[in-house]
Length: 105
Figure 1: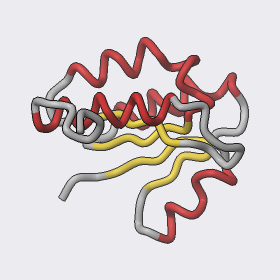
Figure 2: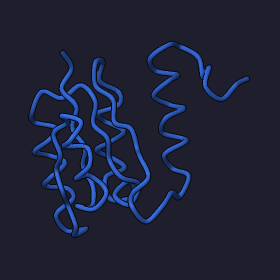
Figure 3: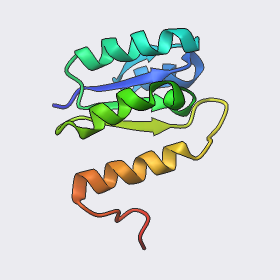
């Protein structure tokens, strides 16, 4: 079974724990890189990250998304979406099935 991690602001990720996902609360930008490295060093197949941290982790996310068997997907945080999540989801779908079937209708 694939392990799933969710990283983001406490208010954004705490509900994912009820679904059985591993949560990694991070409320300060300065902590983001260290928290993300801790997740990356574990055996997670899917890593959800709230959009707030995407600009801070851009390089690390690109590196991980090139690896087979691991995907980082951006999700909106409690404050709402900045549309980065839709682009990330599109990339993840394309990586998984070879075509952007979700948005090329």
